[in-house]
Length: 537
Ligand code: 5FX
Image 1 (cartoon, rainbow, N blue to C red):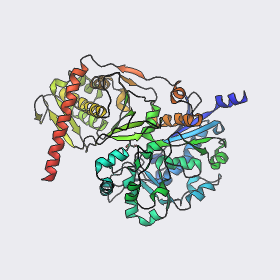
Image 2 (cartoon, rainbow, N blue to C red):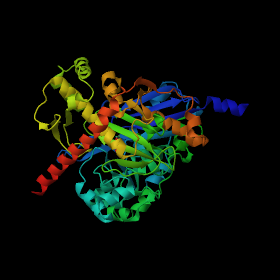
Image 3 (cartoon, rainbow, N blue to C red):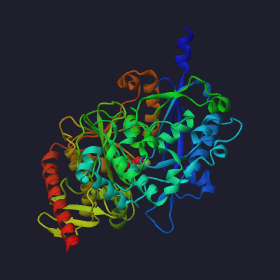
């Protein structure tokens, strides 16, 4: 009986260390949110002088970092805020977390000793002030490692081989190239580094009070892991820096219980000494969990940049897409697609065509037929990742044109072009569009019904939305329970509300968009060929 009461009253914490803030939610045993708190880096910790949580190097604008100590300081602050909100930490049975992917933290030699001796009467940031051999670690926005990317690809025989091994070709923001650059440009700091964490395993380390391993899902975003074998690839480690294996530690499955919470949190915040820390992971894997995405679903987050993911049974490598180990099922994978030009591009077209108004934008969109009279537009304000192109490209039924004949054609071309691209990449990953498939839309633009109708039609699939925002933070909290109890994921999350259907595709949708997707593929291939022939001239 006493046992049951303990279980019924138990709570779980889920953290999310995103680019701009540290957030945390306390959930009850039914996974309902009881309390939330957050610390915004720019405004709550102005002494670190970040912009959007990042620091852009004045002499090299591609070099983008974040002060590790700022994140440390945010931990004490956010827990104080959660306590003020009424959370009794003694009820917390397990914690887990999510964090921006790819960023790295460099623990100075001796840091693990400091972590073991933390004094609960002092702040963490005072005690860890000298624990980082590189005080500002590179984050996912960094694009300064093109040279190291080429070195990594060369080490295994080219970009395609690298993608076959690690799930992605070399990306500037991925951690392997970042570590290689630290080693090459700051050899003393590298030598003085005891351990390298991802942002996720760094945060887990703070709660664990000892070095936390990297989980397999977030570890897949480093260009260092053999994702089939679930271990670091020795040739890639060697190509980055000497002694890297011991600095990384072995990766572990994402739902691993790492151990009890550090005595610092027991003494300072009254955590129960039995509270368990479950491995922390990247924000995209955590979002997959927060959305409870299963097979047959395609999730699209419509934000500043658009991201999309899907559950994969098998690792299927697609040029420019990413394959990560799945955070829920150790034997499955997930695909991640990042499209740089998302809402800012939609806004640019809105401003040019619809008097800066979403209402007018939607009217224009609704006044044009599906398929847009055969017009197709691709708009890349900044260099796109998928595909690597920049500029505006407009095509009428037969040829490339400088301008469309009307504003409404331009508006529809922008929205259709963005979704057709997503369909093409989803198909490449084996997503069987229209055959029982479902789309889950999140992010700012998921409130726009006219845009979602285009999404439903392009994918010939119903579109759903979820009431709950903050899928990464919630996914982390669900993982805390999953890891602690070892219960089946579906059972753990069964009590959560189902997504709500908002649009169905029109019956003629596939007749229109299957050929348009083919045309998109031809057009993109032509543009890429044109670009590479210009470069070789
Ligand atoms: C994924 O590859 C990314 O770089 C981003 O989505 C970061 O995870 C954002 F935090």
